[in-house]
Structure formats: structure tokens, C-alpha cells
Length: 491
Ligand SMILES: Cc1cc2nc3c(=O)[nH]c(=O)nc-3n(C[C@H](O)[C@H](O)[C@H](O)COP(=O)(O)OP(=O)(O)OC[C@H]3O[C@@H](n4cnc5c(N)ncnc54)[C@H](O)[C@@H]3O)c2cc1C
Image (tube, rainbow, N blue to C red; front, side, top):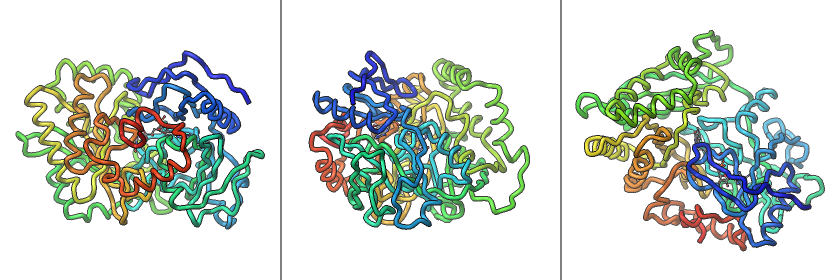
């Protein structure tokens, strides 16, 4: 099969910070085309990179050679293509192509009375783009998206198609794909190496997700001080009292450094028969009305002008915005409540770092100190509150939430408004400071310092197992890019 690329086509990520001018820009709509693109690239000695929605802020998705936009690979597939060991499983399995956006996937699941068990705070990413960088939400008993993957279909070097599952996987034979030869690989080691792989192993064509019956969530947001929350977090109980717990911290203090404002978000599944009304079906009135009447681009422009020209106003604006998020009760379908909503549509980028449960409180204190220092010494501000999300450890070898024991990690995210002076410098400072506390960067978020002076073997205890599987599957390095070299993943 011969496929023609679009030429002179520029690819940019969602905030225009990452730009690729690939030699060939492809938008396949079948697996046959994906196989043909990979074979052609290899014949001509080019590299290949699949991209999703470009919602990563790092250079993880860039390539100079062949770029595969996966948005036309967005069909939900029938699960009867799978040969399942147990037919009981079929009801809670969902098979889809890679490039479906999460909001479309949620809608398709909702039509069937089903839902994702957990998700991140946004739904514009493609399902595989999100899974490939270990995208997560919150909940110390809940996995990130990769944790709900039962199988993937990977097109790797030479156009080989692999159906990969855990050792005791769900299938008794490979998936049926229009007469394409597919090899079934059932191995925990290969599976845990290939679900979160940042596109290094090839193009993931399809995924089987474990899902659940649809459910309602109730969200409560309360305003308090960091000192109060800190002691509760140190005691630990607060983390176990809710399905989801998230903390948003004002980086700047009131009372001359003595206290920082804070917003706690708690979410729980509603018991059956829960009643609701208009007020409960929306987030706080102020937030809802602002999102109706103030388009994100206008709000972005107003804030950008203020932050750049009147930087001293930044702390006051951040405190005010935290207060508007207070909300006694918001009830809705799980995927609506888990989505942060209109704040996601402001053009912003962020760094996100994972910390072990024994280190994160110390890291927060160091950051608060850093923010005061840059404010004092150069009027450089971080232009958003930063968040702590508590998530279950993952067994996927390259997930930044990796843990070899059951437990949780704290994901700390630092957004800055796009276009604010000193934004990238501020995030690089944050990143460097955080590596002192053993922080591990989110692959898809802004990361400039790579992995700092750490080694991947130290950050990821199973990195060498991953590398062995990588070398077995991809001896020619077809899916490498500058990011994999910069982060010393593959050199
Ligand atoms: C507004 C916003 C909110 C966000 N919220 C969260 C959050 O709550 N939690 C969180 O953890 N992250 C969050 N992120 C980060 C985001 O989830 C990740 O960066 C995610 O990887 C982006 O998915 P994408 O579809 O845009 O993929 P891209 O950014 O285009 O690609 C990401 C990686 O996936 C690879 N890839 C894509 N498709 C394929 C494929 N079919 N086969 C093989 N490799 C592939 C690419 O090569 C690249 O390495 C957020 C980002 C934004 C912009």
C-alpha cells in the first residue's frame, strides 16, 4: 500500500511551545495504512512518531521525520473481535482505536451505561496519547488510565502487529484484524514495558480498557489554610476518608509568610437514589457564571496583561480565584465531575512531579520558600495555585507513579499562564528544586531539565527490564526522537 504524506505541514502542541516540521505528515484511518507508513519509513531510514492531541507540554511527541496524527483512528470496535477466555468479562471491556479523544470515549461509554473507573482532569487528549505518558487523576486506591488497560495492539518495527496482555491475560487467541497476522504476547514483563512507553515501541493501534457501570460523583471544595491541611496530611487519615482528595495551594502567603490559603477537593461516589437540583448540578455559582460569560481567550488576555504589567497583583488574583472555587456540593456523572471544566480552556502549561509519600510535605515547604524568594528578588511569580493529587502507585515500569509496593505517590502540578514573562524560567527553577527531593517528572508535562542528574535506573527500578524489552522489539530504533535522547531513555 502506498500512502502520500502531506508536505510542508507544521505540527504544534496545544500551546504552540513544541513545533515539528516533519518530512512526512500522515493521518491514517486504518491499521493497514499505519503498517505501510512504518515500512516505508524504515525502507528510507527515517524515524516515526505517533501523536495524539498534542496536549503534552514536553517534546515527547516531536519528530523531524515521519509524524503520524492518530485522530482518524478513532473508531470504537466491537469486542467480538476478541477471543476472550471468559465471556463474563465482555460486559466490562471496551475496545477502541487509539486516537479517540477521551470526551468522545466517555460519551460512547455513557451511551452503554458504562464509565471509566478513573481519569485525569481533562478530556481533550486521545486515549493512547494519555496512557502513553501515564496520565492520572487522583485517588490513593485508584489507578491512572494505564491501570485499566487489559490489552494493547502495537504496530512495531517492520510492521509487526502484536497483541500484548498480562501473563494471565483476558484472551485465548489474538484479536481479529481484517486478516492481518497478529502475534499474541502474554507476558507481564512485556505488558508492563509497553503500555506506558511514550511512543518508543511503535504505534499503539487499539486498546482494551476495563470499565465499570456508570456512577455519580459528589464533589465538595472547602477553603482553609495550608497549615491546617499539612497537619492533617501528616497524620494521614484525611487521605483515606475520600475516593479522591486534591489540594490546591496558594503559592503566596498572607500574614507575612505565616499562612497560605488552600482549597481541598473531596469526591465520593453518591449512594443510589441521590437527589440533585440545579445548584448541585453545577460547580459554584461564581465559577459557573464566569465560565458562561467570560470566554477563555478573553480571560487569558486580561490575566496575561495584568501578570506581565502589574506583577505585584498576582498574589491577590490567585487568592481571589481560589475563593471562587469553593463549593458545598456538586453532583454529576463521574466524567463531568472529574473534569476540571473551564479552567482547562485557559492557555497554560505546567510541570508536574511525582513524590513518594515520605517526601512530598518537605518538598512543598521548599517550594513555598522558593516562590517567596523569586517574588522578593525579581518579582517573578508563578501565575497559578499549584496542586497536590494523591494517586495509587503503578506497576507500569515507566510510569512516574511507579512503586514496587502498594502505596501512594503525590503528584504536584505547577501551571503557568501561557505568555507570562518568566513562566518557563519559573518552571525550570521548580523542576531543579524538586529533584533534590527525589521528584520524578511527568513525561508529558513541561520538563526542561530532563531527569536532572539522576539516572533512569535509580528513578525507575525496572528501567533495565524495560530497556531489554525495548531492544528486543525495536532493534533498529525506528521510534526514537530527541526527547528519548535528552532524557537518556535510549541513546
Ligand atoms: C489541559 C490539560 C490538562 C491535563 N490534565 C492532565 C491530568 O489531569 N493528568 C495528567 O497526568 N496529565 C494531564 N495532562 C497531560 C496530558 O494528559 C498528557 O501529556 C498526554 O500524554 C497528552 O495526550 P495527547 O493525546 O495529547 O498525546 P500527545 O501529547 O500528542 O502525545 C503524548 C505521547 O503519546 C505518544 N502517542 C500518542 N499516540 C500514540 C499512539 N497511538 N501510539 C504510540 N504512541 C502514541 C506520543 O508519541 C507522545 O510520546 C493535561 C494536559 C493538558 C493540556
